[in-house]
Length: 387
Picture 1 (cartoon, rainbow, N blue to C red):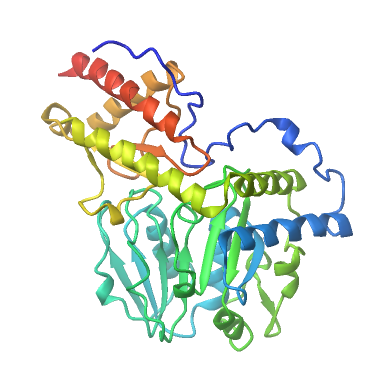
Picture 2: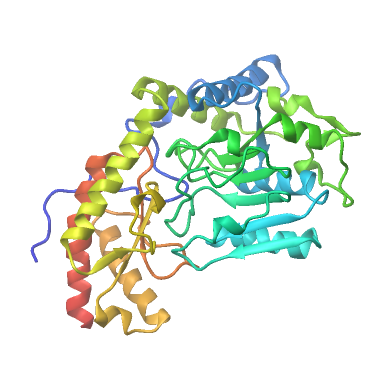
């Protein structure tokens, strides 16, 4: 086939850090309070602004607290695990890489005894009906590395006894989340909004505050994860008084992103854009005969509209062993990169060999649409070489 002649305006399709907002340049950071103490009145006000704007745009419940944590989404989720777990049994759902990481931590680091693991291969969800909500439950809303998401929160009971701890980093700002079904919600700045790395956020329900103030884990909690001391919530975390020193450049950047979201029309505008991008990719896959979603579900409610993941199905490719398939994927993605049309489109290294196109709200649907014929072209170039 002929080489396309129209390129995406923005070739950045990385799943993290994700593309900056349209129109972003370095001048957006010109008002950053660099060289200032993060404990100063002005810096704390800026940190509180990032918290308040996030809570307002997302429409989080009024009685939920929101704080900034070190260590990106990983740090925020680890803080929840280290501070909250151990009082009751724990159920962990793992169907992609990060869910599996939480399993490793629960077994090897926290050494939890009463632990139920609901694990599935990439492309499928565990049986949600088997989750025991008398226990604390850890799950990802959207499989960052598998392209599979939970369809909704209906499977989580309102009268649960345990806490629900939700890793929402590739879902929040990109798809509807039933917040009241989640007692802990964590995410990072570098994912959905294209912010700079190393900072995470944690939203907690009143039930979490009650746990923090009535229960002390049997293990020592590292300072970077500590949300309570002497059975008292450290309220400053949720008011801009961070546990450790944040980057005020990163803070300025996320405030810029949040201001952009407001100008774009708010949360629903981001969700709608992402869903439109998924529709473009879904229609394209339907029109060709060499690709399918990594997800085993036909119901689009289960397929991620942010980290959109799909794989090659033709025999010449699938007959190769995994090493061979990964080599082919690397060649295809190298062609996309060399032509500056699709950067970082290769799937997650531990996932099955696949493409992953990030289509959160900072990525224009027009750019998603324009990269697709380039994938067709690159695929055919490499197929001709190998088949």
